[in-house]
Amino acid sequence: MDPSNIYNNMNIKQSKPKGLISTISVEVVKQDYHEKVEEILKDYRKKVQVPGFRKGKTPMSIISKKYRTSIVVDEVNKLIQDKLYNYITSEKLKVLGSPLPLEDNDIDWGNDDFIFNYEIGLAPDFDINITSKDKLDYYNIKADAQLIKNYSNDIAKRHGKMTNPNVSKEGDLVFCEICQLDSQGQKMQDGIKNDATVSMDHISNKKIKKQFIGLKVGDELKLNVMKAFSNHHDLSAMLNIKHDKLHDLESEDFSFIVKNVNRLEPAELNSELFDKVYGKGIVKNLKEFKSKIKEEAEGQFVIESDRMLKNDVVVYLIDKLKLKMPDDFLKKWLIKTSEQPITMEMLDSDYPIYVKSLQWQLIENKILQKYEIQVTEEEALDHTKKLVTMQMRQYGQLDSNIDQLEDIAQNILKNQEEKKKIYDQIFDQKTLSIYKENFKLNKKSISYNDFIKLATEKNKKQ
Image 1 (cartoon, rainbow, N blue to C red):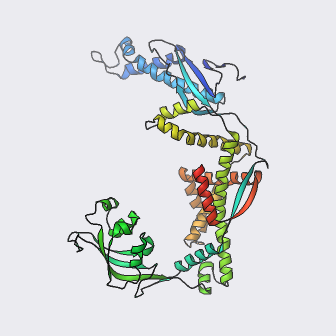
Image 2: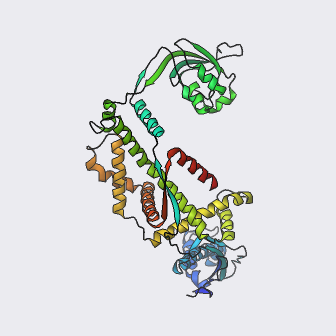
């Protein structure tokens, strides 16, 4: 069908698109709905009780006068929706949003024939072709010496043991009796009291933090808790009060009496620790331990590198294709379909974000179509089984549940929300492979800290 002409489909007409906006006129004539309306009216006559008449004996003229218009309205609206969406489907129209009735639809329900006009927004027609001319950077994140040292220390702490030294030093956990003080520095009779552990790492004020160093059991500190602890969630938990009560404290001064000092002594970096972490004999010395940490860290960083590549692809293709959109229609559609009232100020600030998201949705759908990316049920099941296996390993359940693996995966996929997540993950993996195969990637090595800085800068620009 020639798009330059007026479209005709029985009693439906579509205007030539202008700026990706088109009008569809739907005509409904009496013969479309008359038989159904008469059938409903007859059924009403059997069931409706009208004062002055026995049930089922009310004259049809009275039934018709009382109910015909409302029944016609219902039936015509059903017909319109059917005809409109059947037309959109049969003509393969790529509609954005949903059809909006025009304001000039002034319907006289006393007539037999009706014409309804709708405005539709159309998706732009475009093609996508990724070649070696399309260039992007891909960052290989390297684990430097400081990061490996930090990871080693974290592992040592996780496998360390808790001791109770006589005197506190930086990094210790100080268990205290905490009491609220009055303006005279005395414990309040009905004030806040709680026993809690104070982590020096959570003390934001450097001067106050130093006061917790060199303490012994029985020592007392008096301090302003609002100055000492900037994280109010931690502070409310420490005082055992609700978060909103912090801003209504009768006094911000508290006494901290030391009841115990706890210190986490990291495990030694020796063969005993290596065997605990990686299995007996797999890592033989400190050099191999650090090498293993480096390998694992850089393996985990691939996820971050891939995520940045995906974000860069989105920005690049949106900018490259510069898809035209039916902006006027989409703005009207957003205003009319929003559950909450939308002001023009809100629309002006949010619309650019919305339209970029919509552009990417169109681009991604085109990529899936062009490269014939699909996900089979078998792939979804295999992917789910891998996820379940990984989770079992985290909890040390390797052999006992292997026979039940398929049943567990099948049950997960019965949940439609979980199923969608699984399918989305596989689609992401497949599209990522397409990007890596077709874009010309300029591979760059970067430290983790520099990568974080780069990611932060990019997020600010988007």
